[in-house]
Length: 382
Ligand code: NZQ
Ligand code: ZN
Image (cartoon, rainbow, N blue to C red; front, side):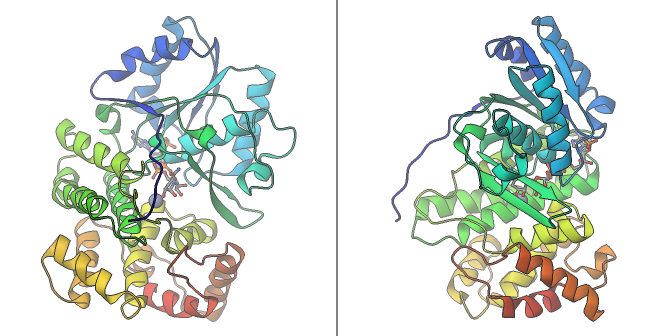
């Protein structure tokens, strides 16, 4: 087992009605709030009204930046920063899915930096001070609500970068499963794929940590059982709650203690598909994961076989990959780019994607991908 430090300072409030306490808790961090939201779902679902009422009733002044797009862009972060500085806010409250919360985290971390927020995303500047972040999650998927990572895109740089800083752990995260009831079937399924992908990343981590492996298998099995049920019953609170808890557990550290875990290139490929085609994050993963496993069939055969035995009770590598693909298909998620309407058969389309992969240094942490693997991967994804 690898050495590890266990640290997670997020106070997570989980369950029906938990935002009742949000106003009082936020008031502990000051009076002036930058509220960050997405394109409109929080307003149409009613979550926005509830949260604003809690904040206002606690005497807080709320300044809003709305319109964060899915696969969030640095321009929105900069605009929200401008507003937050004009209004001299004391904290950021991010109400939405991963894109909104990641933007909120980046705004908070950039607040005291005079230069560009992109410097912080790229790691050129490492702040030692940030505004407190409070997250109110409306979509179960990324785990951002309980980790110190944000992922932001720059279209002009053609880069999507995940970066971490412990100052970006939300001080409090409110997870009311009823806030996720309005998530459409597509994004509900992408969320389930995302949590499975995060668990798989830990599974393929280096180091023998059997307890972490058991957590991983338990989380994926939860998704395998309740994900398909949820897709047929989107307003079922209990199923929403199970998936929400699973998604948070998949990327809050629990699955990775005693291992060297991280991205093996699959998230990296996904981020490139986001840059070039603005594909939803979960859909990039349901396409990229099976392809990555096919590429690694002869590189890490034992680990793939063990996964198949633990999850699907199958004994062969091919059966394991087939079962994973079948699982993603049963969630109505694509397993090829063609299914998403993306055609990379033309050399220029493939070249474009490859160039973005090189630019984004898609290499994986331990199971290294070399640029000569890209062609094979893209063929497997096509
Ligand atoms: O913009 P609005 O109107 O809010 O609509 C969103 C968006 O269209 C909608 N939505 C959110 N909550 C809803 C809802 N629709 C109806 N009812 C609700 N309650 O769903 C759409 C997708 O939202 P988004 O926030 O983009 O999805 P997700 O939570 O999957 O976040 C994806 C982003 O997170 C990054 C991804 O790369 C991507 O940019 N990730 C962040 C990670 C982290 N910080 O740890 C790790 C992940 O691996 C991932 O990379
Ligand atoms: Zn992810």
